[in-house]
Image 1: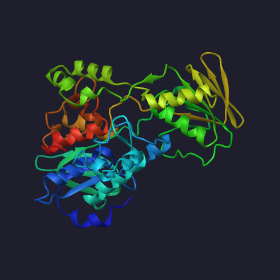
Image 2: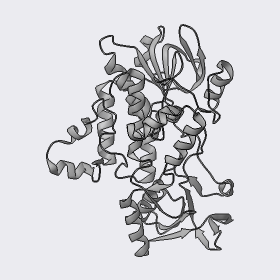
Image 3: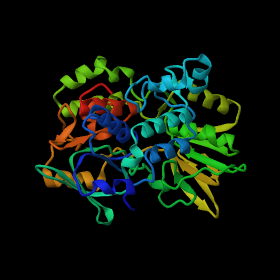
Image 4: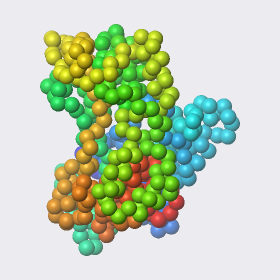
Length: 399
């Protein structure tokens, strides 16, 4: 990959800030830094291997067929939390088109348009370095970033805004089964029409339910297989975790092992909001979607088909198996973060996640966001709200 032409003028000089990761967190933090230090015109770069910023978020929402976000409108990428609602206009008819109640949740397409507006507002496309980071060297007076193909950059400060996209959770039985894909794999694309093919979707959370409802609309005969009962929660953690109601006690807790337990207990993994579960139940009652509450025992290949055998002895003949099984519970960053730990003995808790200061610094020149910051930001650290919390901590102003 080549560094974009617009950045070549900067490469002989140090950057003030480099953000590694061009997703939701990277984009919002970049905008927040540029807004905070606009008078000094900081040199900032966003290193991300994908062809454009927010690429993975866009592909993931398209894969699930998501029509409305789970997050409320105030959780967006602009500096002003009400910017998205202002963008929609004051008239109620606009709000009915662009937002869904409760909590004024934006449509996916409207959120995308607004996100692109934020990217354009801060000219973030011009700051995108399309490359993969292979090594980070922490120095006393700067940080050196070694990218693939011999690209080297240096910066006064860096932010790790890494997601979990490279840690797909795939059950063991699926490893050697053809016609089986993870919904968040890089190459997954829905066909234009299902053409009455049998599709088995494995998973019971919001992504699986959204995918099942979407697959039905394009003609698939859908079988949704989940090993647990449907779990109904409006958000993936209680809204009290966004403010002092729960975070005050969390931050007073000095044991990181206890904090980890608090995070695990607070997260509603494999859950979905009421409206999606209600829609799914109606489709099940109308026999439009087949629902199976069971684990998968094995999958057997029969020519171009796959027989999915469930633990309750049900057998499903499928043309395609789609895994909506989320991501592994692993620390993001893979070898990049592992190398930082081994070379610089950065502090970690027993769960191997970073121990940070109040500004999310892991090193005087290294900040983190997202899952890497959850022992400081709590169970919502990975979400859009977590991106906003991280930006407030890192740049020191309301974002």
